[in-house]
Image (tube, rainbow, N blue to C red; front, side):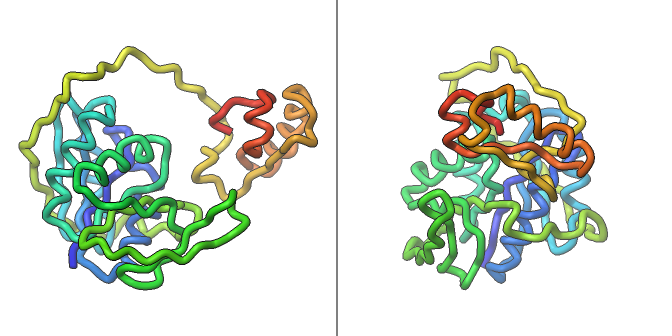
Length: 240
């Protein structure tokens, strides 16, 4: 069996979520390769090659992939992933954008947000906002999987020596374009990768009260999160 892990990166470096996804992929008992798609992404590719347990790093370096547009990335992943038994990606906002498209292109079901690997075709995943853990088994010959990163301990970032190969496939669907982005900067860790999270819900009553959490979060080096209900009520932005 073989597994392709889709790297989460910023072109210059590999994001920690990729290391969690590799840990999940190891549970599948298969050979692991990593796909790095971006523009000027040599730094991320080098970091991926240093991850222990990775056999090969495939690098698609082209302007079409610079901003990770889902319409373009999904076509690339579907083409490259066709040769693999499993396609695994961290359940980040970026990967959630294109992985369902990959599953559709390959005509298989997606197994989303897994928290445990029981076997090569059986997984655990939360449902009903995490109140129930479902065990799901897939009969698809090819598995398209997203991984809840906090459920898997990250593998080491150094110690490997994978080969690096260029991927020539260029896909520009021509149906979307990057216009711009507004990046929120914070000294606190990212919510998706934080070891400690201070969270609030509807009981906070309004957005101003969420600021009460900032002091303790700063002292603990924690990220601040919010429940779905608090977000839907407009107390805080969706990224919390």
